[in-house]
Length: 344
Ligand SMILES: [Zn+2]
Image 1 (cartoon, protein in one colour):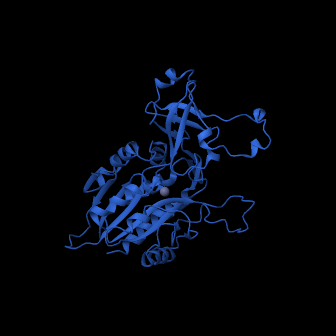
Image 2 (cartoon, rainbow, N blue to C red):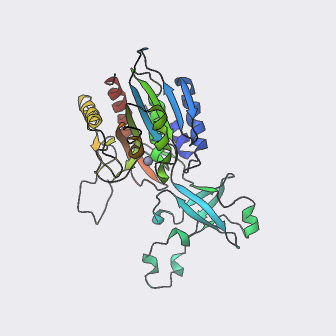
Image 3 (cartoon, rainbow, N blue to C red):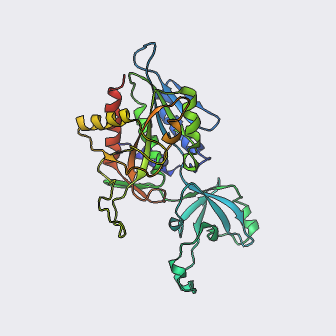
């Protein structure tokens, strides 16, 4: 039902913000035969166009958008001993960095983010502190600055090295945010609809919704559906009084009503929830007020665009070990297909 091979290819690919080329190539190859036009704009957004079924003079313009980039790191300097200092690209919690395997630069040089062993935590309370990423370093096994410089340079991207794995009901990978949205868009482009469809695979979302901002401008859609990954909360959380732990994996895709960047269009939220109900597709509502997506920019394009977000819940999002449910992906795609039947 869902194409695990393609999800694996998409999530294993390099795509830290500003370096989306490999993801773009994979997507282009997948959609080329199914669309009427493809263009890449100056920001690196890949925008595919699929004409409406009938040749009505004024077909509705619908955009689907998902971002190609993922959070990661960038090398800032190499010290005399050959260790790499780095900065974060996008929102990464310092706690998830410790002792992780990474790949550095175009040669994909393997490295680890070094961490002081427990035996050497001499200062009182030191083990309770979270190290700032400025105090961390990447060890690529080089014995000197010169040796490290043979394969790595400041400005090189660093990606988590955690391959996609099929866990039966769930899938584990990095970068479900938002390769899973990209995946659903690729699948949606296989069909033709009664409206003109623009599929915007955007860049640099994780560093400030930059690609999405210009993607909608050129085509100015009548409405936009943002397909995303969103944090799941269904794991043990000792301090949290709220026991609802939403959203949960396996309970359906998640609809945003309001987040930090957008109030989603009421009509489109209703269209999604009504369609879900009519087709017995489970859906969840995102906890209002948290997070943000490309919707935050796209809905403010020119004179405004009616916009809504549909997302697949992912545990441990923005970490190297995200988990999603296959059922949620299938339900999300079904909901989009059924919703698209109602737009004309
Ligand atoms: Zn995202």
